[in-house]
Image (cartoon, rainbow, N blue to C red; front, top):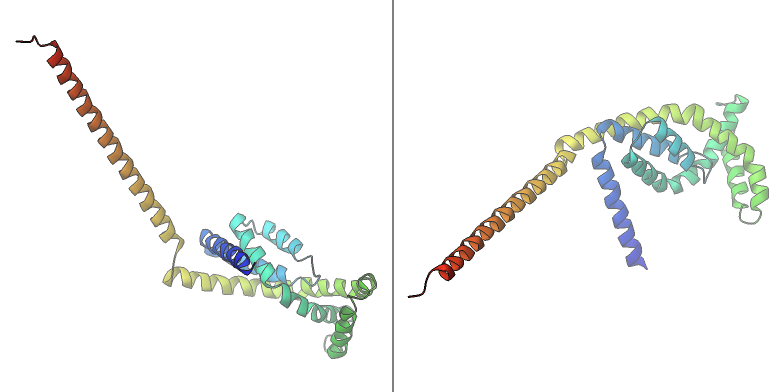
Amino acid sequence: MFGKLGRKLATFARRVRSAFLELSVHQIGIAVAVGIVGGFFPIPGLTTLPCLLLSTLGRLPTAGHIVVQALNLALAIPNLVTVPHFACFGEALWHGQLFSFHYRECIADTVAVVAQAKDAPVATIQRFAIAFLLGALAWAIVFLPVMFPFAYYTSTIVARFLRKHGSHPASSSTAAATAHASAAALAALSSSTSSSSSTTAKKAAAAAADMKASPKP
């Protein structure tokens, strides 16, 4: 079981790595920023929606969507941890009490409500619906405009440094070009070999025909 899971994770990791190599530095910055910002959307289970929306607005290719969803999955647990903080910050924004709001009490009450979700999920959702909306408000007003440019510029700087001092997609394209050239050379060699073999066979057939046509002594 674990071996099969490990193989799937390894395959997924290789796919994400190849997706990174297919993207430009600008596209990597957009994909990382979208994955981080969308992955922290404070309504659990709906993080894929802002990821898809922001990816579409950023005009990311398929490889970019793979990177975004990989970051979205990686941030699942941190997202759950930060939901009460977003909810309380959104409530402080809503009431205009950013500096006088009792954050500790709010977070403690929010965590207590979430802890009851297992016993009464419907009642918890109804009670926590306003908190979800206030958290989404804080995410849209504060987190999105602050974190998106920060994640974009940071990831582009890192990607540009790695492209300059590490592996570059051009190396993979060069390897592919070398492989194509080798294949073409082998095909040409095979073609010349077959043509020479055909010429030799024709000469042998002609010699045999001459022998048959010549009169016997």
